[in-house]
Length: 272
Length: 80
Image 1 (spheres, one colour):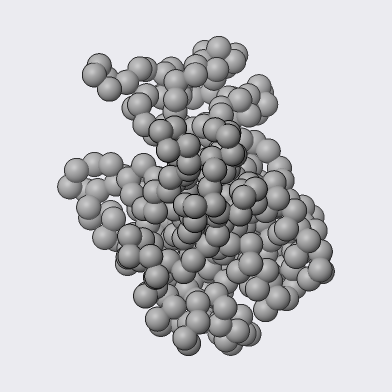
Image 2 (tube, helix red, strand yellow):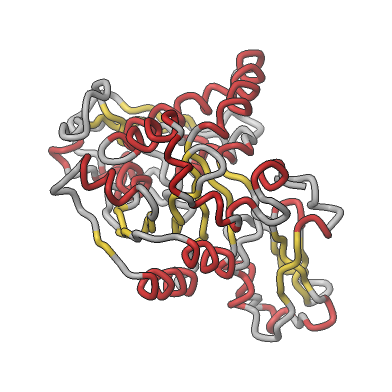
């Protein structure tokens, strides 16, 4: 069972528990302080700081201490978990005050601006207070849902971000080239940078025909969990690599790819 | 990853328009704020750091594009 769901899910996934979106969440001063720190220009410093810390994990002894510290600290900080399109639509249906903000990762990593960070809840007003003239775009619920669908079609991975577990504040629509969370997770295996999702891909072997060797799903998967097996003429799945974003499904014409709960897949159940 | 080692000497990224960042297909370079955080209204001044050099695949586009010649990419250790 996912640790966050156990504590904050009330039988459901932590981000699908309406209580976690309530105003009461903002009565926690440390959460208010954290959100204030990561809005406006503060996010630049935050990305710089966290990536510097996680990069220390490469050193032999210091690294394991850093990993322990990150494990303890991460739930009180700003982090996220991969979600499917369906879950991200459920998330926005529970939230309010939607606002699109420029992706900080893209700004810092490729010097580009893209309004692809869908924030909600307290963020709108705090961002307005921090950067009154900064770029922001207020959107309605319907626009937010259409936006998520559009980004999904473009092959963007959705991530629900918390500002101190369990309050979700943002659904980010990520490209692995920029995402600093994934850049912190992959090199030294720090799962707290971004958790795997609650689902994994389920591949129905008998339906897969490898699309005549083209296998468009393989390219769609940013995590390298799918590979084309030439001998079999089919796609094979590496469950350990799957983050459960569900993007590959759209690329599968025969409908061989679907998602199933991570907990029901023994090979992936304990890997978050 | 192949283990390329990227290093960046101090440069003026604003002058060239952050060319290395726009070019890098792997997103190796991070624009890190130079000074400490004070408040939101102050736009940070950035320097380029190869924070994510683990992802470098050695295409060397940044080296040719950098007008200051500030970027150096060293190949992976032999045997890798």
